Image (tube, rainbow, N blue to C red; front, side):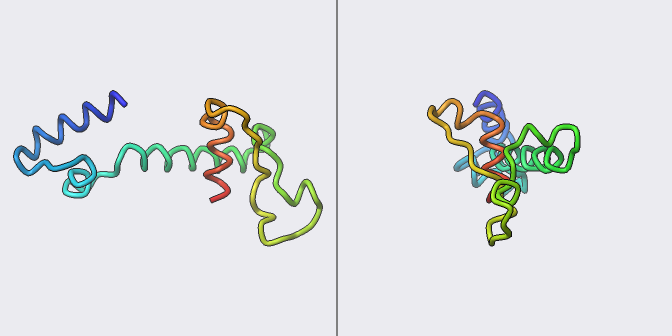
Length: 101
């Protein structure tokens, strides 16, 4: 959130009176939003975890590994049940949701 505020201030300085909103400033300056950058980096990291032999067990098993059947959604990982919002937004459930998209 602090980084977004700093970036917004920099956009206001760079664009001057042309600054309307953060999203439009990102488009005008041809820069990705912080949220999209964060999602892209997290997705790349999750894919590297998925391919890793050493760290694959950190992610939940795929649906094929659980049932032994090949279905249309067998490439997806098993969803993690999250009782709290804090756990739902933590690293492993977030990466699992990104990989399942």
